[in-house]
Length: 157
Image (cartoon, rainbow, N blue to C red; front, side, top):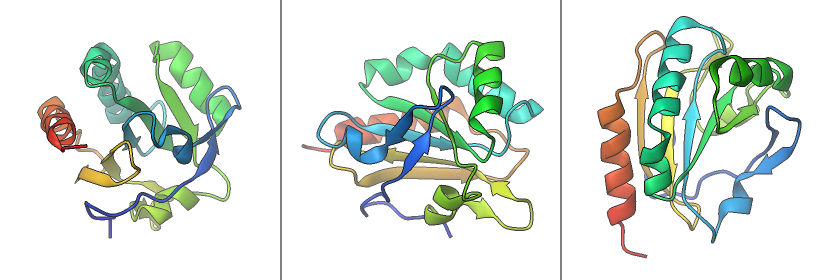
């Protein structure tokens, strides 16, 4: 079961597509984060979803929210995926231990071996303020992202 709103988001330390380690705690006190779990790089729905985010990156930048994608793919796969599609945001490899962060957030699908489509909006204090999920094969809507960003940015500091 996915984590709920108004609880501290679990910290993690994962490599990005360039092999640099990223910790959620590094954003605390700095800026909010949108964690976007997606099943697999190069799959049609994931590619379309992340291309939509790429094409609307200003929506996150205008809200001063760091956009971070997470999948169980390797960092090498994520780097190739980002380069091929022109993604100018961080992609994190939840590769080993396989799906550990996805499991902590309650979105890992054991029978499939990857995360479902889940988004968590985390405030500057590291608290989950909004989240939404869809099943594999069903893309998240841009309107859901905008509503979550609006809700996140309306929370008093």
